[in-house]
Length: 189
Image (cartoon, rainbow, N blue to C red; front, side, top):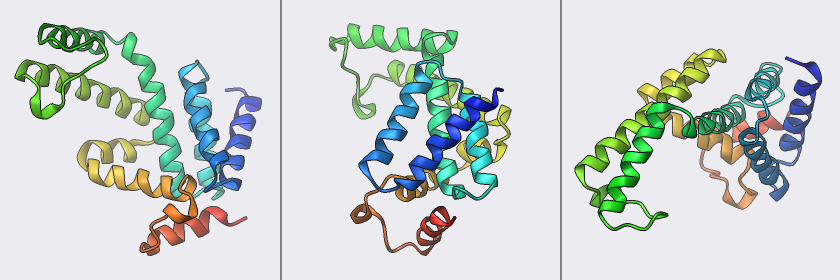
């Protein structure tokens, strides 16, 4: 891994923290996702996030959010190449077409045919396995285990990071003392 790439990623993380709670922070996070989908090495970003977390430059919650964004985007790249994901996508699209849906439409889970639900579930499970595998390879086995065993806790941790980094001040849940500590920690020098 090239150190100049890691420094660029760290610089972007510092900017996100400095601009927390602003439109600019949201734009930086959105550009991270776009860069990852366009071929930027996700390992560089994971390493930079881990360095920033371990040096207490960002809170564990902000690191959790950023790691989740990297993993989500790194895994999204697999949608068009993973054989099972491709097969299940083709299956769900064929069922949708057979049922008269337009190409850009999809079923809601409450009104989908059972065969579509099965294919969709297989797709979701495979995507989750790819995400968890990436997390484990990057040394984040705890995140992978949480995603597998307690999706609600995983979503809660991601939301705490989102509240800290991306929520405008008026959007923050001020009732949470843990969130307050997370915000204070991320603002510490």
